[in-house]
Image (cartoon, rainbow, N blue to C red):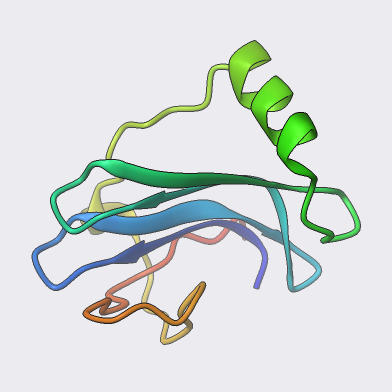
Length: 97
């Protein structure tokens, strides 16, 4: 996988949004509950490692990362799930290619 990806609940709400580079998560990732409320934010380094809590909080407080819900109509099909989560159905991803 490469580029921006979005994963959706069956109701169309984005479950997770973030980026892949060379098949690894990179940069900011935002996870939501099925009602759209932000549940968790993660930050991945350029090498795909999960940043620590202090680095993650600093990044999100300094950078404007859109909490806007991605539109499914701009997505291509994918069957990959970002994390095992009950009730999450992947209906698409948007790649940077």
